[in-house]
Image 1 (cartoon, rainbow, N blue to C red):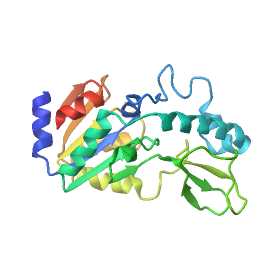
Image 2 (image 1 turned 60 degrees about the horizontal axis):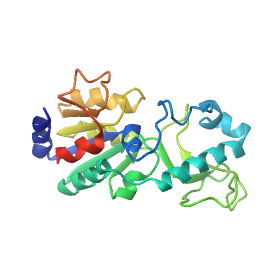
Image 3 (image 1 turned 135 degrees about the horizontal axis):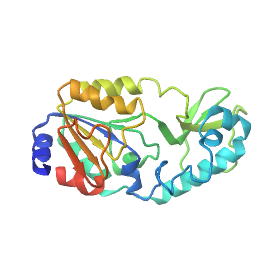
Length: 235
């Protein structure tokens, strides 16, 4: 099956890729649902909703700053590197990610659709200005030059995706010859809806995941294992 999936990638002129938390986990970043994941000792209602942030922005920012420090210490995996190489080989390549850690950027990927935002951006709740903030923040909670409170540039529960993100993703999937789905449980929507969309559009769907998902029986190739191992093999 691996060889057949490799052939499908080799023959494709247009490829879209969807990555999830499993790809980042291979760089040492915990997933949200694992036993050692981010929600283990905290309620997501306190840390990943506008209401929770409004109640205690300092507590939320202390948690996000801890996450940022952990991510800064991590390195892109062989899976990240393989996607960079794949993009170089194709005229049309789109990387759609549910991850907010920026590891795809650090690895060198260019055409990225960030469905859930970016932890390295901050946005002012007063004037709306958004900027990138790498490195540790000097004060918590951080403030904008206008005096307004800054929030992490990630999508919280109940919020809309970044403007144009899902539209870009849909277009990339509908026009792709092959659609690679790596390191995602395919349970978070609307990202998971891209898989049946790819199937309806006639793309060869290649799933890479250590465990089976709801779509494993429908895709063309369901490869069991870590993306850091299998993605380089697809090249």
